[in-house]
Image 1 (cartoon, rainbow, N blue to C red):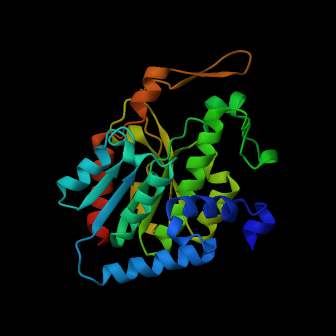
Image 2 (cartoon, rainbow, N blue to C red; image 1 turned 30 degrees about the horizontal axis):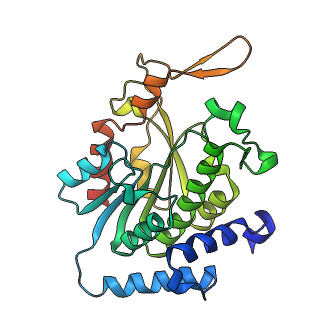
Image 3 (spheres, rainbow, N blue to C red; image 1 turned 180 degrees about the horizontal axis):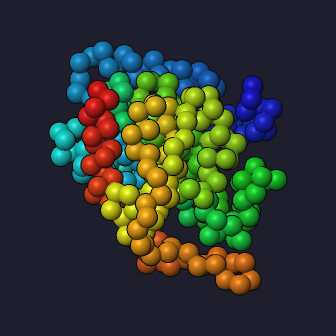
Length: 274
């Protein structure tokens, strides 16, 4: 109901298209029946005593978080298109792969989203045009904006499904990202009673300050909260006299990699929450 009134039915419309493309054998079902069916099958599979994933990291990049969890003997799955083309969540096969992976997760498994933020950051605002007036969907004449929106829709849908099957779900974004404000994502975060904490990559050994917002349906996420560290770090952005932002491309790319200290903190959080 809220999706229809506050989001012009976007989530139901887009998710239906995604799910029908990924599961053509289920095209007779609407989105509510589809999500319910996938949830019920997940719980049935869990009762079959098969070995299930204890974590899944979507958009894992270099995989430092997954590596830390694996060192703690957690069974898991790092997913990123740079690792395997099958992990392309812009395609129906990639979406099917992601959902089937989630359906083989254990109860309380960590489901982590490091959804690409390039089109959602303030650095790109002059091009993306993501404002409250357009529900932060931006100027879809640009391909990078359309891709960003597609990955937001994917993240929102999988986040909701992970919540429905009792997983520990986390969305990580830079502090200036407006992705959590996009209506489809915002409604999912609200429905799942997810809260947000602020933390800093520099507090875990990153070379830049890297302020993050971490959203989760599990209050255990609060153990990752940190105050702004009083350390000298390199700036990812410069602010010109004209008011425009520009980014240091090399530093921005390196800042996308979680420092090992952060991976260890996440692994310890998961270990103490089970």
